[in-house]
Length: 335
Image: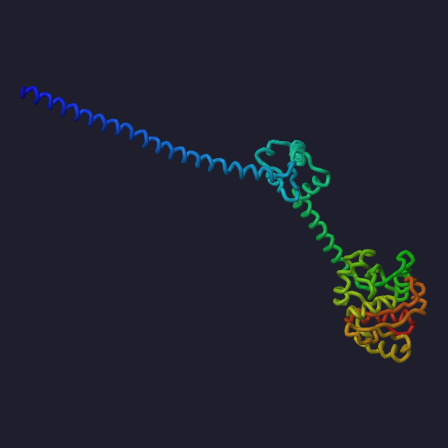
């Protein structure tokens, strides 16, 4: 009886132990899916963030695409020419004849400029071949200037003069200088004249406005040339005289004329000596009135108030000034 009770207790204990182990296993099995679920949730979060990061560049790219112009226009001044237009592929062209090379270049240029307007093509062509165009042009100009300077530098000057504010260049008769004055002193063909006839100077008009009616290069060079004693005399009207004196382009009679010639004018032609304001505003004798002379009437600059003034002060300037004044006023000087 007692043995049966012991067996029964043992069976009950074994059953209870089995139940406890079963519960632990169930708890473990229940806990595992929760951890797995947390891991899956974290993985989903990471995947979502990665997806967002991948999508952001797409947004930026979309914005950049929207900012592009509606059509593929390329300013030829900002787009450098293709390398095959700048540097020839020597290996490719080595086997070609000249005719084939020219044809290949034309084809490439046509392909590159396709779709451009005429102006854009011209701009591109000038940009792509600027060195090929500029270098020969610079060389030609330089050689021309050297040749001209060489021959002019070797020829003496009969007179270097300028006419300011001429009303009509076609009516201007420079033969009074280049024929009458030439023959008066018997200059031969070795001599030359230097001149500029189309200058417009007026105190009330800016040089920029005046240069529209003449070559602007003359306006840039003229003051500098006068300062370097290039011109002997300037013929002008009263307005031009005021501009020249106020701008210090010309000198006073006492500075420009030889002393003996200055004495003649102050003694015998004092009433024809004309004053004009300097840059300081103070008037000084800058010119001689030649309005009533045959020289001025034949020259016909288009105005009645004709003055001669003097931008040069070198010995050569004074020599030629004495010659022209002797011719204009018939002073009878032995030169």
